[in-house]
Amino acid sequence: MNQPGIDIQGDDTICAPATPPGVSAIAVIRVSGEKAIQISNTLFKSKNTKSNLKNAKSHTVHFGDITDNSDIVDEVLVTVFKAPHSYTGEDSVEISCHGSPYIMKSIVELLVRKGCRYAKPGEFTMRAFLNGKFDLSQAEAVADLIASQSKTSHDLALNQMRGGFSSKIKELREKLLNFTALIELELDFSEEDVEFANRNELKNLLKNLKTEVSKLVDSFKLGNVIKLGIPVAIIGKPNVGKSTLLNAILNEEKAIVSEIPGTTRDTIEDSISINGTTFRFIDTAGLRKSGDQIEKIGIERTYEKIKLSKIILYIFDVSSTSCDEVEEALNEFKDYLNELPEGQSRSKEFILIANKTDMLVEAPKGFRSLVEHDCIFVSAKRKENINLIIDRLSEYVENEKVTDTAIVSNSRHYEALLKASEAIENIEAGFKQELTSDLVVTDIRDALYHLGDITGEITTDEVLGNIFSRFCIGK
Image (cartoon, rainbow, N blue to C red; front, side, top):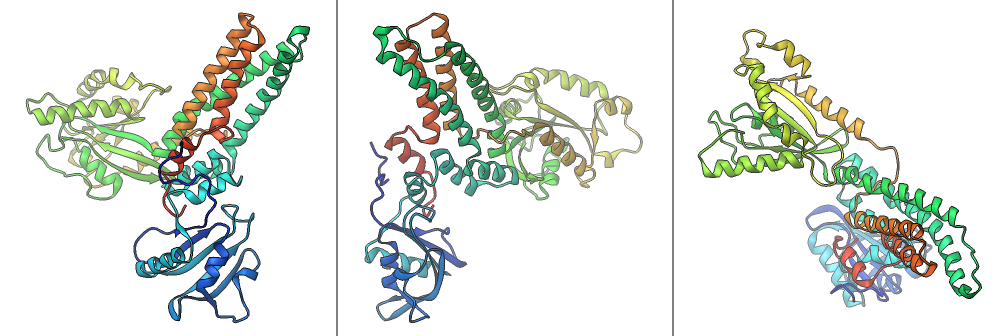
């Protein structure tokens, strides 16, 4: 069944603004469908009296006016794209007008009056998919590209949109499909007891497939972090400068700073891009025993954030804390630092930060021991040595980088790969149990189905409607 409001067939002409609401210098209105050029031509009056959009070559730009009968709505540039050489694969027109909300609304209303339909969210990209311009994973990467807020998330989405991930899936599926055809052929000659598919080669193929799919499944941990940002928890006792440090890193007064212990009673989050990677910083409630019910809830949430974070910044007041106290505190949180959420394979990065160096009159006690802990000495209040923390975070990203271009960042793809991996294991088990070909081929078809579900080679209208309804209108 179709998702409500989504036209899977895409056999009419649609239009919508491609730029977000609000005032801007220019705006773009997109039109796509069989009558896109014809309808646009009825509204467009070229400055060149000999020019006509219907006779225009593809990928040409035309200067003129959008008119409502004799009234000029706006002076515009119109770009013509003829099928199949357009984003959607259909005849398409892009109208670049001035960015007045009134002008955009007027042009869209004129297009609708002339026979267009207002596009639903993601409908242009859905048409591109249906017309073979993208496979499904590439189409989904378009939304990720639009939403990207850092260089790494941009690069990942761009690579996936260009087919870096889908080509790997198609390669795996093609290898398995060839063997499936031979086994299916065996079933047609079952009475003759013939064997077309070499079982040893198939077992080797399954072993390789299992390895490749496992790599893709494991890459989701990194892909998800790149897409959403690396979570960094700032923890420590009350009044050691956690909120001041957050403000210093973000270079803005995000968190309330007070000399009163326990000011931060809930987590405060904000993001910053460092060398192209997004980090999500979480300022947490101070860790201490408290009788205040609200503060206790905040402390419980702190422990939850510690579990979910990839990086822990443990900050302490170097002017009033001994090394023994630091060691004792670290031992208290050891269980939380080592306990990993489901799907997280590596230990957390732990960075020890000695704050309030501006309060020191001499070297802190146990200085040598703190150096051995690779401690960073800062004054968050004066924003001194904050760059050392930034450098350490950058080093973490460098160590986490994966050179493989096929990285999974989409939860739908991740779930499909898990199911494909399970099907491959069932195939292997079937061979070990010496099951007949008709039973083994069922699991092979399952693996093919789940791999094909990623790229859209096998899918349903309901799935398509759900995916594209999340896109912005005009894309």
